[in-house]
Length: 540
Image (cartoon, rainbow, N blue to C red; front, side, top):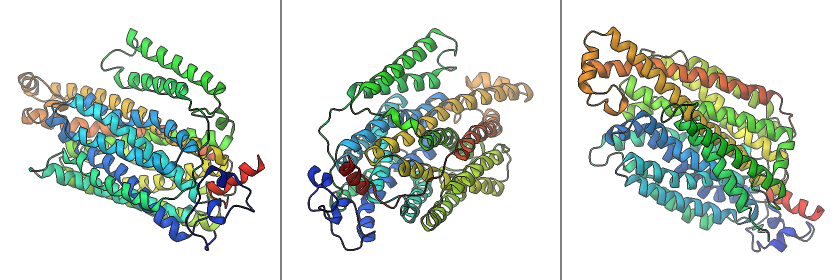
């Protein structure tokens, strides 16, 4: 990289499109190490807000659902609502990043996230909480996609490894600090769980200011129409199918009229989306991306990892608090081994990738460790040794650290610069899609298995049936008010049922291993996304 450049003075489309021998180095996308660190400061803080919001809330969910008298299905929906809206909006944010100012879009997503967070923290019922979590998810989807896209525009794939440690550190601090902070807020009577939503707002406000002062990217705005119709069909199709996955088996039977309506409508919308994308001048998700082997296999792997990781991690806090009886603060501390493994592996693998330019063997090793970690976790029950559980989580964290970011890197290294936003958001989209499906399906599996174990337990424990009849419920919603014998039965049932969630996650994660093995390794580029865009424009 050049070390003798300054910030851009001219970010017009003409400057970006001009020949390389005329355009100053700064406008070709070259930035010094210091300039990159300055630009990353606001973006990493925005990412910190996004991760913090997820980890703070997930650890407080048992308390939130108990306080608002929610059910197990609503517990799942509080998480699913955010995943659903962030998933559906991710490709749209990504495509907009290819057409408009990335900086402005990141700031807009932060504002949406702040508004959603404030309203969610003011909720008086689970239903309103779920509704505002949808708005929060729209902003979250933008942050998750746009920060990766902006990094690709500034930093070449070969050099990105040296900065991936920073991203891993932010993830680690937010993931470790989130549950601890969430537990502290929940356990502090004069604050309470509502501050789990309010706490990210000041960080987001600071991120807005930092981004305004430090992020300077060439504006590559193009005079094209936005594919609103394709965006509408995509959102409708994905939402219908995900809502069906979430509600089927609980609110209505899998084989029912409601299922036919949701599935039929969702598939029709997806078909209309594909037809629209084939005809659109600037499609939201360019279907040509799927002709590339690396991109297609990376998307398959990302979706499998999303199913396993998001779907299972959501219920880890529930296991530690409901089954093992730990406080929210203690439950957060018990996840430290997983985050330590993630931080260690993402940092070390990033440095080695920058030095060697080789990335595939890290992906293969990481995906195998993810399967191994979930396989170990599938053996847990309500009496598992906590030190042993920490070891299992460390293995899982090491695997995730070597897998998630490197899948995005493989795709960004392959596609054309004009498709960086769409391709990056496609990986994030399918990972989030997998996570949404994972939370919904694994939540349904957990709920059904817990119910079966409770029924068996009622028959085996003398006096339990009478106590259950007196309490009127044996579910999570009435856990705090249930008789002691029923509380003990619920704890044991949740502890013994959670292992099945991790077993399913291990099987799904094995799909990622297969997909990654068949990815063809391509040497990492040494040009940033902005440099490549200028070069491709000249060639065109």
